[in-house]
Structures are given as structure tokens and as C-alpha cells.
Image: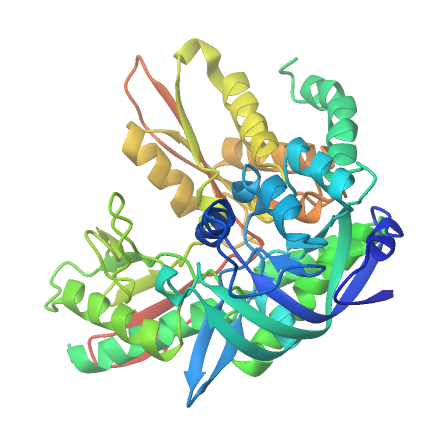
Length: 198
Length: 285
């Protein structure tokens, strides 16, 4: 299994192929719908983000966190459905130089195209496997935009051997989900005739 | 009925439900892992199984989406307990102590109550039974799978073929989004609202328990094989395991109707059941 270190370079992500398993070490940031929208608002207004996404990874995740004294600790942190961010992600990738998106379920063709154009990959983390994911998070460095609520805030996380992650969209326009889709289209007539519904 | 003790037991029930998966689900996941041939699918299933074991060992929720609180309650005919208040209090306490993620919001303002209690939430279904104990099943359900729910009012002429087509289309549309391998609950008949409830309640039947209705059992088996041949696979990344099972329930309906509903459950098929006896005994099954 390939081990990757953040921040990622263009060469790092270009060397990844769909179907490959990797693990990540370094700084990542959670962001869901609300954080994506606010980051783009900041960008439009020319305001600087309170965190640096350049070369980093965005994690589609609304974690359960628990405060112990001054520090936050992760209770559970699996991926959320990435598709919801599909309309926002191309602009986020372009604006902030994000090199990897971690999530589940894949993203739209527009995002796949943006990943190819700007050099970014989509890494699928097993949905629901929140304890395995939490195990790979060594430290909660901080939280931004806490007013958005626990799930929607941006959590700055230091991860170590985080994964396994499957390269599901590479930086060359390939998507494992689209490959699966093509296979399904081929199988469907056979399955329908078996069920007597063709 | 000692309501304080019952409340404590429901807090423990919620905790159990989000931390420990029922044995039949784990059994089916292991069986599916053995059958998988692709590396990508095997990695997904191995991660899922390892996560389940780690969650139990560490006493942590399996998934960060601890769902919305759904309860199915069976009552003896002469019950004397303020159950609604007890379940609401237990939900508040479990949200704080387990902890559960506060997921419950107002549907329009999107304001989060912070304690998973809201208008008609927890959602509690009551039904009487002939036993002398109260049975409470907690079925916390995440949004990823619940968002894939669908129902249709078919015409009677569309019949069984129409039902199969609807289930297939719903699973295809859902793809990798509801965290496959899933359990597919199918409701057939009833009224529109009852039909969806049948689909959801079917999810409570263990995966190693066949449907007592012969026709429904055949339908479940046929659909399970077909859905696993599609190739969506674990997490939609391809493979032989798209569903862990199909569970169907039916109710009589209007002669001019054929309602069908699909309610999908993710692999983290969380459920736990509590029995509270008259003599004070409390058992989490």
C-alpha cells in the first residue's frame, strides 16, 4: 500500500491510478456543504481563509468531537456523501489548490474534469467506518467556523497512516465509479430478463 | 413500572445500538467477504469488519452518523408508564453521554436542537401485543441510506413485475450513496404511509431469519441474487456484494391500489431491543 505525505505535489497526485490503495500522513481539513459555501464566499470577497488548503486534502466529514479541557478529541469521523458538494468542488479545487478530496460515493463529471485540469484526486474512504478513520487521526489541531455546528465546521486534523483510501478518481479524468457504471449498463439486460421484467 | 430504571435502560439500549451491530449482520458481512473476488471490494469489506470489531472493543459508535432516533414499541394491553417522556429523556441523555451526534433539526429553519429531540422526534411507533412485557427496539438510522428511500403508487396491473422493477431501479439510482452493502426493505400494499412503514419495519427482521410468508420469501431471495449480480459492490466501487439481504413486508390494500416502498439500510444496520418485564426485570437482547 502506497504511503503519501501531505502537502501533496502535482507529481504526487499524477502518479496515482484508480483502484490503488493508499494511506495519508499530514494535515487535512474537514469540510461539508456549509464550509464549502463559506470558503467560496471568502474567495469572492477577496478575504483570506483562516486555514491553508494549498496542497492539502479536504475530508468530507461531519465528525463527533468531544472537548476534554482545552483540547478536542475525535470520537467518530467517517466520510459523508460527497455528491452533495459536487456543484461547489470544482471552484474550491481551482481557488485553493486542493490536491485530494476524501469522501464516499464519488463526485460528478464536472468535478472529475476539474480534478484533471487542476491536478487533484478523489480518495474513497469506507463509508461508516468511523472508528478506523478516527484511529488514523493523531491530533485535532483546531476548529474553524464553529458557528456552523459540529458537523459543518472545519476541523483541522493531523493524520497518520490514514486509510486505507481507494483512489476512485485520478488526475487523468478516470473514475472508478464510471467504470462500475459501464459494467452495470452491460449487466442490466441480463438481470432484467432473469427477473422477467425486460 | 419504575420509570427511572426504564429510562436508564433505554440510554443503555441506545448506546448498545450505535456501538454493537447485531450478530446476523456481522455474520452476513463475513460471508460476503469470503465470496468477494476483487481486491477493491475485499479492502472495503475488510475495513468494515475491522471497524465493527474496533468499535465494540473501544466502546465507540460504529459510524459518526448516529442517525435520527427511531423507536418501535410493543406494549402489553394494560401498560402503565409514561413511555413517551421516558424515551424523550433517554434520547437527550444518550446524546450527551454516548455521545450521539446531534442530528435533529427543524426541517425549514434547519436549527439544530442539539439533543436529538424535536417535533415528533424521537419518532416512536406503538403497537399492542399479547405478551406481558414492553418491548422497545431502537433503530437509529443514518441519512445516507434514509435519503435513498422511495415509494410509488403502482397500478394493480403492474403487479409483481412492477414491484421488482421499482426495487431494481431504486437500488440502481442509489448506487454507492447509501453505503452498500445495504439491506433493502420493501413494503408492499397498505396505504401510502403504511407501505413505507412496512419497508422500514422489515429491516428489523434478522438476516438469518427467513420470511414466514412463502411468496415474500421467494421474492426476497430472487431480488437478493439479482441485486448482487448488478456489480455496484461495497461503497459503489464494484464487486459482488451490493446487498446483504432483501426484507419484505406486506399489508392488504385498496382494490384499486398497489403501493410499493423501498427503505434502504446501510451496512451499519444498527438495532437493539429491550424487554421490560412487570416484575422489574430488564433485558437487552
